[in-house]
Length: 435
Image 1 (cartoon, rainbow, N blue to C red):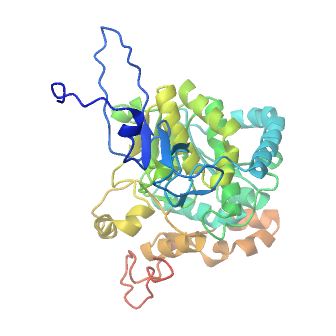
Image 2 (image 1 turned 30 degrees about the vertical axis):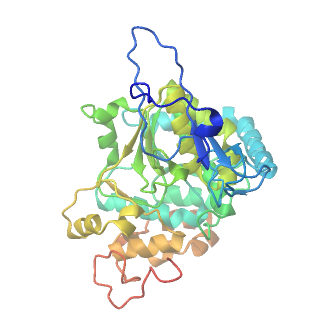
Image 3 (image 1 turned 90 degrees about the horizontal axis):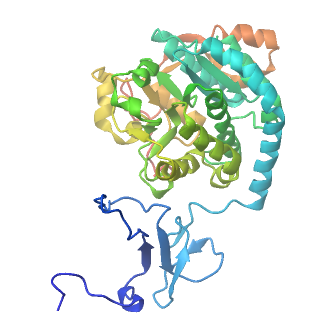
């Protein structure tokens, strides 16, 4: 007897007998008579707000394994059978490192705000600024971004670079950008480019990425933040400021990363290109990220992973409205690697697009090779040699940086990757080393 179609009432043991993993969703049974409350269960990666239980051993093991003979026990949101937890509590060394960074930041905050306010007020357009952060090792990518925008007639007068060292600051100023070097905050930040995605130098720069958006937002400006590994075909500011667009109702708008894994669920938001409107919801989110989550950025080696988790939290907590641009006119490395259709449209000139973000790469050298295949590498050889630039005097560096842009350099590196010219004789990118 099923009581007229209702599921049978079981005790906990019976109900969970065949469960290796149990997701528990808590909902209030109380509702006003005026509320017609519905509950939707959507197929997606598990939310961190779901209580997870797993048949696994107790203890601090980094990798949980299911054992059918064991009872269900509470586990973290990032625990998966046979895999490491994507969201571990930060190690004490990272917590101490984050605290030292915060101490330097708080000690310098008053001076930085007073020096930045007039700069931002001077360069802002429609109360909007573009911010980037870079070190010497990525200065060539910064210059390439500027050259790409200049080649397409785009005004960059509202761009502010947060340089983490003197060389990066000189290069930014030399190529015509507004720049600030807050030595008191960025002391000890690596000057070289990261050898690999996710290494220690990479993690340090991920912490630095928090600063530009946080400070500009604190001072009352809307902010477009981007990494330096982008090129601009059309000015994206007009897209975000279009008052007739439905996007005006969103607090934060992100480029789609393309990665649908648990680490970046539920938004797959790419934090290398995103727009933030100034309001109390975004200010609270960014303050939360800055004051409480730097250690987790160091632990996970990912600004994107941590910020995405906070987006979900604040969307529920404060009503923060988040939008991911799942569209072809803001392509990324995901399209470069995974979408033959989009890349053919780009190379043939049949797709109108705003910016291209060359992420989904292992290191800077790969980015440059991919840019060169697409005809998007604008630097002459002198400017592409960061070691040589760094050895020049400050005045020589300023003078040389102002002359870096040249006609695009097109060259083949991989026969199986998109290119504007045939590259049939080149090696494969997807060989056994890159599978």
